Image 1 (cartoon, rainbow, N blue to C red):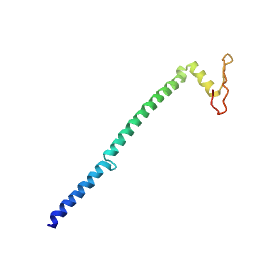
Image 2: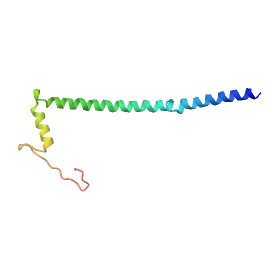
Image 3: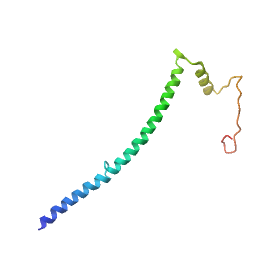
Image 4: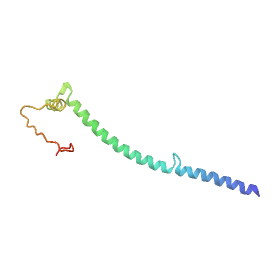
Length: 102
């Protein structure tokens, strides 16, 4: 009689253990949902980074010696050196008390 009770209890315990880990475990259903959300987030970030990389590659190709774009060179030199052409009109915005431009 005792064996009739012990074996089903052991089986029930094993089924409960594996069922719990199927849902809550490191590779369970809940973790899969989290992984899928993380994949979507990272794919969006990857798409944005690929667009930035393409823009940078285009800018670098315009600065190569074999087909140097004078406008691109002038733009980058002014931005890096903080210079302006004598014929440029420069508008200086005063800063507010918080430090942000108006």
